Length: 314
Image 1 (tube, helix red, strand yellow):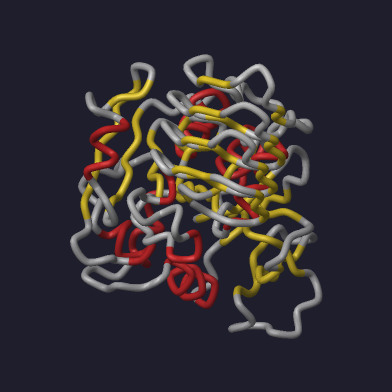
Image 2 (cartoon, one colour):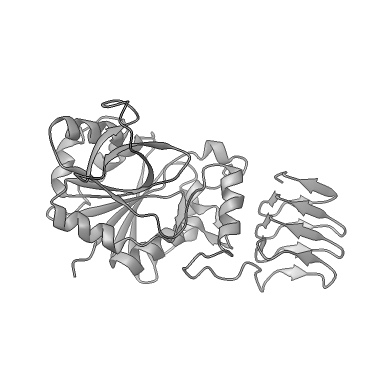
Protein backbone atom coordinates (compact mmCIF):
# COMPACT_ATOMS: atom_id res chain seq x y z
CA UNK A 1 0.00 0.00 0.00
CA UNK A 2 1.50 3.32 -1.11
CA UNK A 3 1.23 6.04 1.50
CA UNK A 4 0.94 9.78 0.95
CA UNK A 5 4.16 10.61 2.74
CA UNK A 6 4.06 14.41 2.52
CA UNK A 7 1.21 16.89 2.82
CA UNK A 8 1.10 20.65 2.37
CA UNK A 9 -1.54 22.24 4.61
CA UNK A 10 -2.65 25.74 3.68
CA UNK A 11 -2.50 27.83 6.83
CA UNK A 12 -1.58 31.33 5.66
CA UNK A 13 -4.97 32.95 5.07
CA UNK A 14 -6.12 36.04 6.91
CA UNK A 15 -9.44 34.58 8.04
CA UNK A 16 -11.17 37.89 7.32
CA UNK A 17 -14.68 36.43 7.09
CA UNK A 18 -14.31 34.77 10.49
CA UNK A 19 -13.36 37.90 12.42
CA UNK A 20 -13.30 38.71 15.30
CA UNK A 21 -12.43 35.05 15.97
CA UNK A 22 -9.27 35.38 13.90
CA UNK A 23 -8.06 38.73 15.20
CA UNK A 24 -5.36 37.03 17.27
CA UNK A 25 -5.32 33.57 15.70
CA UNK A 26 -4.80 32.11 12.23
CA UNK A 27 -8.02 30.45 11.10
CA UNK A 28 -6.57 26.90 11.22
CA UNK A 29 -5.81 27.41 14.93
CA UNK A 30 -9.33 28.45 15.90
CA UNK A 31 -10.40 26.01 18.64
CA UNK A 32 -12.86 23.29 17.70
CA UNK A 33 -13.88 21.11 20.64
CA UNK A 34 -11.00 22.65 22.59
CA UNK A 35 -8.27 21.74 20.10
CA UNK A 36 -6.89 23.64 17.09
CA UNK A 37 -8.92 23.03 13.95
CA UNK A 38 -5.80 22.03 12.01
CA UNK A 39 -5.18 19.03 14.28
CA UNK A 40 -8.25 17.37 12.78
CA UNK A 41 -6.55 17.63 9.37
CA UNK A 42 -3.31 16.19 10.75
CA UNK A 43 -5.12 13.23 12.32
CA UNK A 44 -7.13 12.70 9.14
CA UNK A 45 -4.02 12.45 6.96
CA UNK A 46 -2.04 10.31 9.39
CA UNK A 47 -4.85 7.82 9.90
CA UNK A 48 -6.20 7.59 6.35
CA UNK A 49 -3.08 8.05 4.23
CA UNK A 50 -0.16 7.30 6.51
CA UNK A 51 1.27 10.78 6.05
CA UNK A 52 4.64 11.15 7.73
CA UNK A 53 5.55 14.83 7.42
CA UNK A 54 3.74 18.10 6.97
CA UNK A 55 4.48 21.62 5.84
CA UNK A 56 2.20 24.48 6.88
CA UNK A 57 2.52 27.92 5.32
CA UNK A 58 1.96 30.88 7.64
CA UNK A 59 1.25 34.60 7.40
CA UNK A 60 -1.21 36.02 9.96
CA UNK A 61 -0.06 35.60 13.59
CA UNK A 62 2.69 33.08 12.76
CA UNK A 63 3.88 33.02 16.37
CA UNK A 64 0.66 31.23 17.31
CA UNK A 65 1.81 28.19 15.32
CA UNK A 66 4.98 28.17 17.42
CA UNK A 67 2.83 28.04 20.54
CA UNK A 68 0.59 25.30 19.17
CA UNK A 69 3.50 23.13 17.94
CA UNK A 70 6.51 24.21 20.01
CA UNK A 71 8.67 21.24 19.00
CA UNK A 72 7.57 21.30 15.33
CA UNK A 73 5.90 17.94 15.59
CA UNK A 74 2.51 16.36 16.13
CA UNK A 75 2.28 12.93 17.71
CA UNK A 76 5.75 12.11 16.47
CA UNK A 77 5.23 13.46 12.95
CA UNK A 78 7.43 16.29 11.71
CA UNK A 79 5.86 19.67 10.93
CA UNK A 80 7.79 22.29 8.99
CA UNK A 81 6.61 25.88 8.63
CA UNK A 82 7.19 28.28 5.75
CA UNK A 83 6.35 31.91 6.50
CA UNK A 84 4.98 34.19 3.80
CA UNK A 85 5.59 37.87 4.71
CA UNK A 86 3.48 38.66 1.63
CA UNK A 87 0.55 36.36 0.95
CA UNK A 88 1.37 34.24 -2.09
CA UNK A 89 -2.03 32.62 -2.76
CA UNK A 90 -2.23 28.88 -3.36
CA UNK A 91 -0.02 28.56 -6.43
CA UNK A 92 2.54 30.98 -5.02
CA UNK A 93 2.51 29.01 -1.79
CA UNK A 94 3.32 25.83 -3.72
CA UNK A 95 6.09 27.58 -5.62
CA UNK A 96 7.52 28.70 -2.29
CA UNK A 97 7.91 25.11 -1.06
CA UNK A 98 9.35 23.46 -4.18
CA UNK A 99 12.46 22.50 -2.26
CA UNK A 100 10.36 20.60 0.32
CA UNK A 101 8.06 18.72 -2.04
CA UNK A 102 8.96 15.15 -3.00
CA UNK A 103 10.61 14.97 -6.38
CA UNK A 104 9.26 11.60 -7.44
CA UNK A 105 6.07 10.96 -5.44
CA UNK A 106 2.55 12.37 -5.46
CA UNK A 107 1.71 14.64 -2.55
CA UNK A 108 -1.37 16.00 -0.78
CA UNK A 109 -2.64 19.57 -0.51
CA UNK A 110 -5.23 20.17 2.20
CA UNK A 111 -7.03 23.42 3.07
CA UNK A 112 -6.40 24.31 6.70
CA UNK A 113 -9.89 25.69 7.34
CA UNK A 114 -12.03 22.60 6.71
CA UNK A 115 -13.39 20.00 9.11
CA UNK A 116 -14.17 16.61 7.61
CA UNK A 117 -14.21 12.92 8.38
CA UNK A 118 -14.79 11.72 4.81
CA UNK A 119 -12.56 8.76 3.86
CA UNK A 120 -9.51 9.61 1.76
CA UNK A 121 -7.93 6.25 0.95
CA UNK A 122 -10.15 5.36 -2.04
CA UNK A 123 -9.52 8.77 -3.63
CA UNK A 124 -5.76 8.45 -3.09
CA UNK A 125 -5.62 4.97 -4.62
CA UNK A 126 -7.72 6.19 -7.55
CA UNK A 127 -5.27 9.04 -8.10
CA UNK A 128 -2.29 6.70 -8.18
CA UNK A 129 -3.98 4.15 -10.45
CA UNK A 130 -5.47 6.69 -12.88
CA UNK A 131 -2.27 8.42 -13.90
CA UNK A 132 -3.94 11.77 -13.21
CA UNK A 133 -1.68 14.77 -13.00
CA UNK A 134 -4.04 16.09 -10.32
CA UNK A 135 -7.07 14.60 -8.58
CA UNK A 136 -9.54 16.87 -6.79
CA UNK A 137 -11.84 15.38 -4.15
CA UNK A 138 -15.39 16.55 -4.85
CA UNK A 139 -18.82 16.36 -3.24
CA UNK A 140 -22.16 16.29 -5.02
CA UNK A 141 -23.82 18.86 -2.73
CA UNK A 142 -22.51 22.14 -1.42
CA UNK A 143 -22.89 25.89 -1.43
CA UNK A 144 -20.29 26.45 -4.18
CA UNK A 145 -20.87 24.03 -7.05
CA UNK A 146 -18.14 25.54 -9.21
CA UNK A 147 -16.26 22.53 -10.55
CA UNK A 148 -17.40 21.10 -13.88
CA UNK A 149 -16.78 17.35 -13.75
CA UNK A 150 -17.47 14.66 -16.34
CA UNK A 151 -18.39 11.48 -14.42
CA UNK A 152 -17.97 9.36 -17.55
CA UNK A 153 -14.37 10.30 -18.25
CA UNK A 154 -13.42 11.16 -14.68
CA UNK A 155 -12.01 14.49 -15.90
CA UNK A 156 -12.42 18.03 -14.62
CA UNK A 157 -13.59 20.06 -17.62
CA UNK A 158 -14.22 23.46 -16.06
CA UNK A 159 -13.65 25.56 -12.94
CA UNK A 160 -15.43 28.79 -12.08
CA UNK A 161 -17.17 28.81 -15.46
CA UNK A 162 -13.99 29.75 -17.33
CA UNK A 163 -13.73 26.94 -19.89
CA UNK A 164 -17.23 25.46 -20.22
CA UNK A 165 -19.68 27.69 -18.33
CA UNK A 166 -22.69 25.71 -19.58
CA UNK A 167 -21.38 22.36 -18.38
CA UNK A 168 -24.34 20.77 -16.51
CA UNK A 169 -22.56 18.61 -13.91
CA UNK A 170 -21.28 20.85 -11.12
CA UNK A 171 -19.64 19.75 -7.88
CA UNK A 172 -18.28 21.20 -4.64
CA UNK A 173 -14.49 21.19 -4.34
CA UNK A 174 -13.54 20.01 -0.85
CA UNK A 175 -10.17 21.72 -0.63
CA UNK A 176 -8.30 18.40 -0.63
CA UNK A 177 -6.36 17.30 -3.70
CA UNK A 178 -3.49 15.12 -4.82
CA UNK A 179 -0.80 16.06 -7.32
CA UNK A 180 1.97 14.23 -9.13
CA UNK A 181 5.38 15.97 -9.15
CA UNK A 182 4.94 16.86 -12.84
CA UNK A 183 2.11 19.23 -11.92
CA UNK A 184 4.70 21.69 -10.62
CA UNK A 185 5.62 22.53 -14.21
CA UNK A 186 2.28 24.40 -14.36
CA UNK A 187 3.08 26.43 -11.24
CA UNK A 188 4.81 29.55 -12.50
CA UNK A 189 7.84 30.62 -10.45
CA UNK A 190 7.47 33.94 -8.71
CA UNK A 191 3.76 34.39 -9.49
CA UNK A 192 1.20 35.26 -6.82
CA UNK A 193 -1.92 33.54 -8.06
CA UNK A 194 -4.54 30.91 -7.37
CA UNK A 195 -3.75 27.30 -8.15
CA UNK A 196 -7.07 27.19 -10.02
CA UNK A 197 -5.33 29.07 -12.84
CA UNK A 198 -2.74 26.30 -12.97
CA UNK A 199 -5.48 23.67 -13.11
CA UNK A 200 -7.12 25.51 -16.00
CA UNK A 201 -3.85 25.76 -17.93
CA UNK A 202 -3.26 22.04 -17.45
CA UNK A 203 -6.79 21.22 -18.64
CA UNK A 204 -6.29 23.37 -21.76
CA UNK A 205 -3.02 21.54 -22.40
CA UNK A 206 -4.85 18.21 -22.39
CA UNK A 207 -3.49 16.98 -19.06
CA UNK A 208 -5.45 14.51 -16.96
CA UNK A 209 -6.97 16.70 -14.26
CA UNK A 210 -9.34 14.29 -12.56
CA UNK A 211 -11.99 14.28 -9.91
CA UNK A 212 -13.12 11.79 -7.32
CA UNK A 213 -16.59 12.16 -5.81
CA UNK A 214 -16.72 11.30 -2.10
CA UNK A 215 -20.10 11.96 -0.51
CA UNK A 216 -19.74 9.86 2.62
CA UNK A 217 -18.87 11.37 5.96
CA UNK A 218 -19.25 15.02 6.89
CA UNK A 219 -17.54 18.08 5.42
CA UNK A 220 -17.57 21.71 6.55
CA UNK A 221 -15.75 24.84 5.45
CA UNK A 222 -15.26 26.95 8.57
CA UNK A 223 -14.91 30.22 6.70
CA UNK A 224 -17.66 32.12 8.54
CA UNK A 225 -19.07 32.14 12.08
CA UNK A 226 -22.28 30.31 11.12
CA UNK A 227 -20.36 27.50 9.43
CA UNK A 228 -18.05 27.40 12.46
CA UNK A 229 -20.96 26.91 14.86
CA UNK A 230 -22.66 24.43 12.52
CA UNK A 231 -19.45 22.42 12.35
CA UNK A 232 -19.29 22.28 16.14
CA UNK A 233 -22.80 20.87 16.13
CA UNK A 234 -21.79 18.20 13.62
CA UNK A 235 -19.21 16.81 16.02
CA UNK A 236 -21.98 15.37 18.15
CA UNK A 237 -24.07 14.14 15.23
CA UNK A 238 -22.27 11.41 13.37
CA UNK A 239 -18.70 12.67 13.14
CA UNK A 240 -16.78 9.41 13.02
CA UNK A 241 -13.32 10.46 14.21
CA UNK A 242 -12.10 11.04 17.78
CA UNK A 243 -13.01 14.52 18.90
CA UNK A 244 -12.12 14.83 22.57
CA UNK A 245 -14.38 16.22 25.24
CA UNK A 246 -16.53 19.20 24.39
CA UNK A 247 -16.41 20.21 28.07
CA UNK A 248 -12.87 20.51 29.35
CA UNK A 249 -12.25 18.89 32.74
CA UNK A 250 -10.17 21.98 33.53
CA UNK A 251 -13.22 24.28 33.23
CA UNK A 252 -15.01 25.55 36.33
CA UNK A 253 -18.74 25.02 35.85
CA UNK A 254 -21.26 25.79 38.57
CA UNK A 255 -23.57 22.85 39.32
CA UNK A 256 -26.57 25.08 38.58
CA UNK A 257 -25.39 25.96 35.07
CA UNK A 258 -26.97 24.26 32.04
CA UNK A 259 -24.93 23.50 28.94
CA UNK A 260 -26.36 21.64 25.95
CA UNK A 261 -24.62 18.66 24.38
CA UNK A 262 -23.23 20.51 21.33
CA UNK A 263 -21.63 23.48 23.09
CA UNK A 264 -17.95 23.45 24.02
CA UNK A 265 -16.24 24.90 27.09
CA UNK A 266 -12.47 25.30 27.11
CA UNK A 267 -9.88 24.80 29.83
CA UNK A 268 -9.78 27.47 32.49
CA UNK A 269 -13.20 28.81 31.51
CA UNK A 270 -15.60 29.75 34.31
CA UNK A 271 -19.35 29.29 33.95
CA UNK A 272 -21.31 30.84 36.80
CA UNK A 273 -24.48 29.84 38.59
CA UNK A 274 -27.68 29.92 36.58
CA UNK A 275 -25.93 30.20 33.23
CA UNK A 276 -27.64 28.62 30.21
CA UNK A 277 -25.46 27.83 27.18
CA UNK A 278 -26.80 26.50 23.89
CA UNK A 279 -25.07 26.01 20.51
CA UNK A 280 -22.13 28.10 21.69
CA UNK A 281 -18.35 27.91 21.98
CA UNK A 282 -16.69 29.06 25.18
CA UNK A 283 -12.94 29.29 24.64
CA UNK A 284 -10.04 28.95 27.05
CA UNK A 285 -10.16 31.15 30.19
CA UNK A 286 -13.43 32.80 29.15
CA UNK A 287 -15.82 33.86 31.90
CA UNK A 288 -19.61 33.65 31.95
CA UNK A 289 -20.96 35.66 34.85
CA UNK A 290 -23.81 34.24 36.90
CA UNK A 291 -27.14 34.24 35.11
CA UNK A 292 -25.67 34.64 31.62
CA UNK A 293 -27.75 33.06 28.84
CA UNK A 294 -26.05 32.43 25.51
CA UNK A 295 -27.48 31.08 22.26
CA UNK A 296 -25.16 30.62 19.24
CA UNK A 297 -22.49 32.80 20.79
CA UNK A 298 -18.71 32.58 20.82
CA UNK A 299 -16.72 33.78 23.82
CA UNK A 300 -13.04 34.02 22.93
CA UNK A 301 -10.00 33.41 25.13
CA UNK A 302 -10.16 35.43 28.34
CA UNK A 303 -13.30 37.37 27.37
CA UNK A 304 -16.21 37.99 29.74
CA UNK A 305 -19.86 37.43 28.81
CA UNK A 306 -22.90 38.57 30.74
CA UNK A 307 -26.63 39.04 30.22
CA UNK A 308 -28.87 37.38 27.68
CA UNK A 309 -27.23 37.22 24.26
CA UNK A 310 -27.98 35.59 20.91
CA UNK A 311 -25.62 35.28 17.93
CA UNK A 312 -22.96 37.55 19.44
CA UNK A 313 -19.20 37.22 19.69
CA UNK A 314 -17.13 38.38 22.65
